[in-house]
Length: 136
Image 1 (spheres, rainbow, N blue to C red):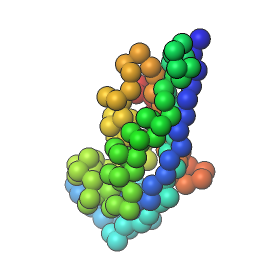
Image 2 (image 1 turned 90 degrees about the vertical axis):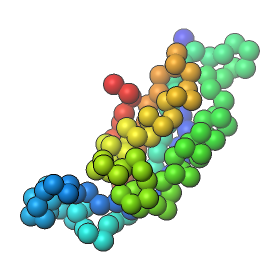
Image 3 (image 1 turned 135 degrees about the vertical axis):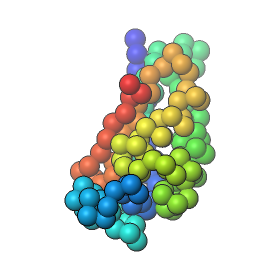
C-alpha cells in the first residue's frame, strides 16, 4: 500500500523571462510582460509530495517535520525574497520559468528523499497557473 504525504510552502521572488541571445523584439513576442527589464514578482505556492509505503514502526511515509525542514533549508531560504535571475546561481544560465523552477526544486530536494519513494513538486506561479514535475 502506498500513501502520499504533502507539505505546502511558499516564497516570494522576482524574475524576468528572456533570452540574452534573442532580440528585444523576439523576447517581447515570446514572453510579453514577463520580459520586463525591471523584473516582476510572484507569490509562489509550493506543494511537495512524497509517495511510499507506510513505515510500520513510525506509521509515517515520511516525517512531515523533516520534509518541512528540507523545504525551508533548500528552497525557501534560497529563493524567498530573491531575484531569481540575479541572486540564485541555479538560474545564471537557465530561464526562470515556472517549469524550470519546479525542476530545480525537485532536483534540490530529491537527494534527501528515500530513493524507494516517489516525489512530486507542484508550483503555483499564480492561483490559476501551476506546473507539476515528477522527475520524469
